[in-house]
Amino acid sequence: MTQTMVSAQPTAQPSRARPSRAIDLSRVDLGALVRRCAAESQLFYSHQDYDPGFAYELFRRALVERSEDAWEYLYQHYFPLVDHWVRRTGGFMVSGETSDFFVSAAFTRFWKAIPAERFGSFPNLAALLNYLRRCASCVVIDSARAHSYADLLPEECINWNTLKLAHADEDATERVSRTEFWQLVDALLLSEAERVIVRCSFLLGMKPGDIFAARGDLFADVAEVYALKRNILVRLRRSPELKGEY
Image (cartoon, rainbow, N blue to C red; front, side, top):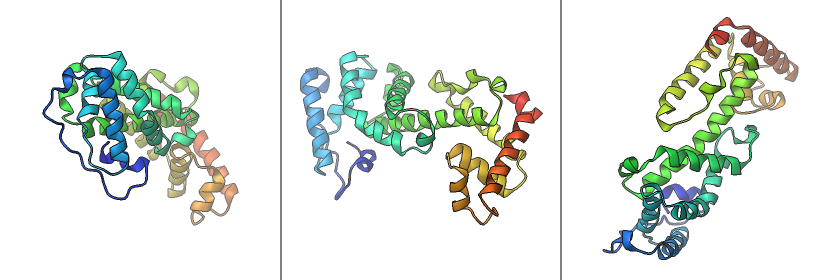
């Protein structure tokens, strides 16, 4: 129901949001609110003017009033959209998880991140959906990066507690931790070819054959990609810097 939703379906002319009528949406029966939300979504997808106020009120009831019925409807209504975002996020194909898993994780993260007192920070439906989209991307990327840690380091050297986001206010700390990790890894790489291998293998999930096909200018053959990858893993797993930090 916002411009962020356009990517889920082909578009011709963008839909335009129109303001809600002068009615108190907080007094509207939940069933009627749900029906109007569905109807306005159909208007959006058919590129007609639509009213985002009904969906926004459902989010308010779910997040401010903590209405389980409103939340259940929002989950069902936006599941296909969040599933679409998850599947388009880099790292999904190498995550080893289903899209259903990440959709559930995204909604859970969204729910925890917006307590009642924070709802006012999201003035409209577009802001809420943009944040939900960020949650969908983050849960996939965090999972893919966690797998990258596991591939690059011996299991006993990984502090798994630092890889899990328990609360939204830990995001900044986690981003710093991930940045520092990859800076340490980068410092241990000896060439552009090694950096390409690490980036393509552990962040994009590419196989050696795919790496060679994409960057044949850096390698003599696929065997060299395999050999360099083995050498990189040995070097990183023996690194006292990485063992000391993680």
